Length: 177
Image 1 (spheres, rainbow, N blue to C red):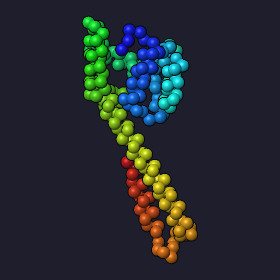
Image 2: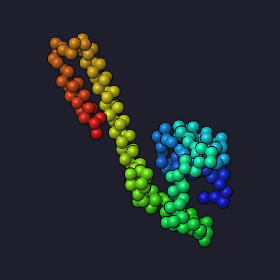
Image 3: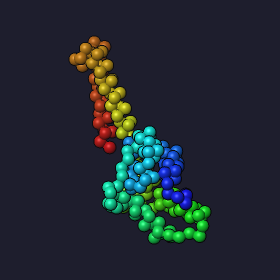
């Protein structure tokens, strides 16, 4: 929190988020067109971490509707004014980190909390990675089987194709999930 909304504040916030969340490359970062987000050092940080920058179109507040909804929720569900900066910091942290991100359901993400949505997305990503790895292994196994069998699928050492076909069946089953 800072009395001034400048590039130093936004850069510190981004650094904090990167350390806490460790996002994978390809993350989409959406912001308004404010100078703190357009600054060279902020944009360099995004590029360095392979984060795709997306900014609102000029004069189109609907591009940033999700953040505007957060601000509206804070004002309606918490409050707009605080007695001190320390109180604001404490109350906003509690509201955003404990309630809003962990428990509050959001219609834009299927009536789940952001934390639940992110866990599901990470789980899906991990499953997709596992399936892709198994496919590569299967293709490698299939290639080595062809070289052992001379490409015909049969060998004097015995038919190994049922093992490869079994792997393909497992992969096919996993990819259907």
